[in-house]
Length: 209
Image (cartoon, rainbow, N blue to C red):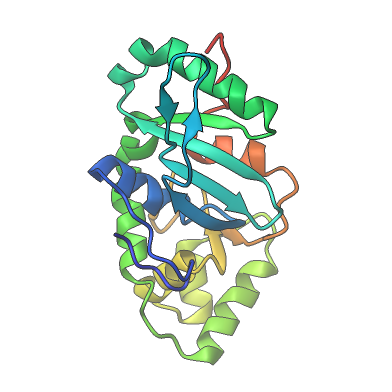
């Protein structure tokens, strides 16, 4: 179980390392409000079988999505099953994503997400917190990590805390070198479906996927 009270009150369950890494990255997605593990069971048509999603995501805007986490080599044998599941969810207005391990863990992104989460409980002086956030908010196109630390006096661990709490945003690749950029947060996401796809490098499942 993952306990991150600054993200949501309820702990988030997971059944594998890959699911854990998905949650770590998803918690950094701007505008995401709630992550539910195995939220319900879906009866499949005519064969007595059922499907339980790995996760249901809910954004601040109200947009929701169902997510299945799989290793890439296990996706193709399940194509017909995912075709049926996707069609059932689409009829209910829910996009269905199958996110594989390369999209979650590639380029050590999950490792960096876990690093950021580690500083979620860190305490920062309120004045410093406000100064750093306001500095980033005034720069819509982003500011380098090096410049942010130099201009505001915030340390790298304190910056990680702001990222974990999504008071500032990072790019989808979660790059954390001094020359990489951080951005203002906009919690009112009007195109969450596009932004979520960009975050993980995926798209909703379609029968021709």
